Length: 405
Image 1 (cartoon, rainbow, N blue to C red):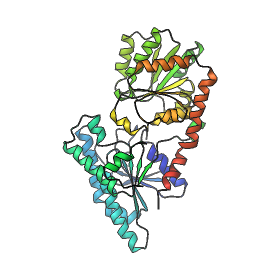
Image 2: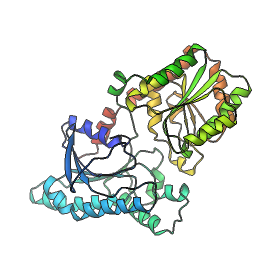
Image 3: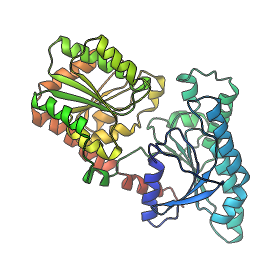
Image 4: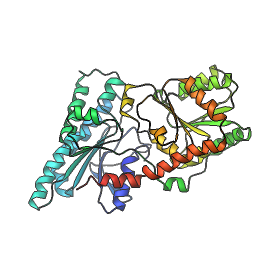
């Protein structure tokens, strides 16, 4: 359905390992490309052996009150049905995995009822695992500007604290969250870092590029241009305006780099207007491609760009999907994010520079323009090896499964 890939990839691997997996999910999310059509709560569909149970919630746009209502609907409906769910499915493991932490209360209720049912049958008590994708409510306060005294923020803080105190294990996608979680009640020995990853099969038979993309990229390569490529959303958080400022510096010094931005988003039109205003001749915008065509796209790049606005949240480290995709692509990564997490350089996959610094971006581009091809390939190969050795979803699912009873 698009965008929410991690739960599906992990669940698919667990099914292959012999587990039965049921996923409770709202029928609407703004992150999905397609949402299911259902006519009743707990409508069940099966995908690759995974049983999805859909809970009807309202639709919404943005991050306003309407989204909060869908959260309330999902939590309320699953909370009220917890006894029935626990009795019917008798889970051995319950994983609460949402952007917001309030689903921990449903998980705790499911565990209580499943424990009672299992005790009568002589089964071991179920294990509750809380998985953290985004740091809520810190994100609401530090990025969204919401007051820590806002009732919504307070509710999220109560949920977060409860999840850390009462879960048997906490899986964190960001790698540097353990001290923070311990401050909020997490017991020693219950923190685990399992990042995002890649699926090897998607890189073995990639989809071809659309003609528009292939034509432009082939033309740039025929002119001997060094292609700095970006793929993904065009939002303020991606710091693409900084990339345009770096492109301006590249053109001023007469560099041979061309900048290609592939994707869509709310800031795309503004970025195109800025490029036109700056008179940038070697900046190109292309429509987004399907996930299956990303390998074909990155094959045409000389390096990939990953950036973000400066934010205190990056003290928790990085867990962006596009970093792992860029590693798998075997291209050097220019990562412009201020963070103590050296994910890219630790794997020898490229260079990290501070956020919001076009000068540093252009400096690295200038250096890479002059490197021998084998030196660039060495960096790309290092990232590719790291992706295969550490970050395939098969390996990540096996690591996660070691937390199961």
